[in-house]
Length: 242
Image (cartoon, rainbow, N blue to C red; front, top):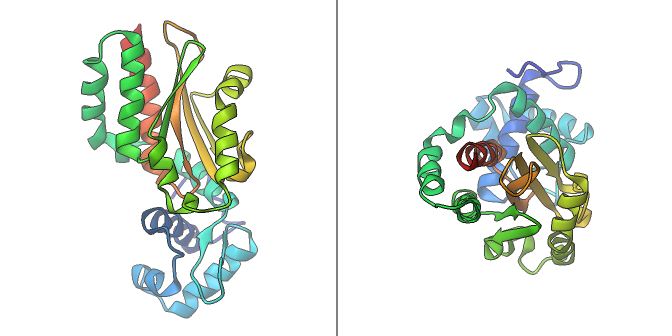
C-alpha cells in the first residue's frame, strides 16, 4: 500500500478498485464493469457497485453511459499517479531499458541520440514522442496519437492540434523544473480541451541545462510504464551526453 494512502478518503479496497479501473481502461479503452472487478476481487457485483458509487461521488470515476461501466476522471488519474510515484516508481519498466539503452548509446552525436531516444519512446509507449534539441522541438509518432480511439473522428482534434502547435514555446518559456513532470487532461497548461496527458522529463544536454524529452498521449495511459520510460530516457540521455 502506498505510504501516501489516506484512509479518510477511501477504503483500501476502493483504492485497489480505482487502480484496477485505471489500468484496465488503459488496456481495453472501454468502460470497466462491476462483474469483471467482482471476479478480480472475489466479492459480489453488488459490493463492487457500492464501492464504485462512492468513488464516483468522490469524483474519481464516472459512468459515460447508462448501464455502462466506469472510466477514470482526471482527478482519479491524478490520485493514481501520485500514489504510484510514492509506492513503486518504475520497477515495471526494467525489462525495456536494455533495448532503450542500446539504441541511445549507439546513436552517436547528441542530436541523433536525442532523436533515437524519442523514437524509442514512440515504439515502446505507442504515444507521440517529443524532445528538445536546442530551440527546436523534435516530434515523432504523430500517427500513433491520432490512431487512438479518443481522437478518431472526435471533437478533441482541435484541442490536440492547439497543444502541439504551442508545445515548443510553452516548454521554452515555462521550463518545468521537476525531473519528471506529469500533466493530466485538464491540468494541461496548454490544450486543456485536448483530452491529452503530457509526460516530460528534464535533462541536461550540450544544448541546454533545461532540455526535455517525453510523450503526448490520451489521458488513458499506462502511467506506470510510460512514466518509468520517460524518466529513464531523461536520466540516460544526461549520462550519455556528458
